[in-house]
Image (cartoon, rainbow, N blue to C red; front, side, top):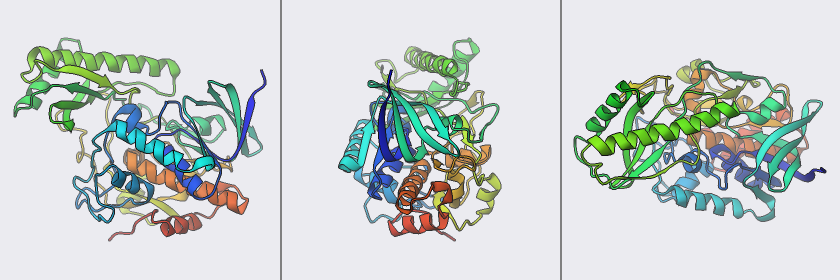
Length: 424
């Protein structure tokens, strides 16, 4: 079977938080861009998993906004803050509708016309490399197997799939952090004892062998006063292994339903509750990470090391989830080391082996502990904007992204109201 071929300047693989923003940034900087995404919509953790938080937009201590650019623009368009805002409360604001965010993502992508082509229900599945460059990326979708020939490729898959298939050096920590299926329960009557009683019911379910492990639980009423959005499922596994990921998805749904039934049976306030939905995909915290031209470390974050090629600012706490039950507030916001805003360098997006590859999002080049901070939604968006901007700049200069001076990327981002922020 002959493969259909698409030629473009920039290919973005994955339309999650990083990929959505990377594709928009590349198109805005005048590069013909193709975005491929396995779901039927963009947004990743926010829409495909259902986590409504803009984690990493502002520092915890003051609520001062540290990420601007496209991520801030999306938050403003969701009505969560004023365009002139310098601070936001809480520091990790939630959006009130994941469906509305899907529509905003659609509108933002569609606004660029022929400069940005979107292929949903499309999965990158192989790479053809020539020398030190990616020649084509093979994608499976309703057209069959297609080949996309791009001058610059941005891996926003979350798992570093394209980077790994291209032969870039990758790292995977053992054990990996657990996955979480997010879910929502309707017609819940709130009262002061709700969280404590819900927690006790899960403790009993675990003792009886009906629940392998859990955390929290976090019952968050951000969508409606009578709707509980739940942080509680914890499933160990490796999401880069197809069979293990499939098992984890099924285990997550089973655990979510066990929790719902336990609460409905024994917790006042859940008597007339009903299960609304779980996220289309289980949430993945950690798989592969690039070992790039620079590996951001926890020491860099703690010491707030300055980089002349900084292209983004991180501020989230170091949030490592264990593969075991943790009760109450353990592993909820504020429990790990809380850094002040810190630099993330351009070199942590680039590979030493593949010259036309950038990696943005949670699979960028960082140590396991550093990545527990940089992996969150808004930081991933900021890295995506840096990657998309850099890819377009490389096209304009007729060089590869590995040759691009990160200081010039920083300057371009700052000129566009994005990039890193310097704070005392």
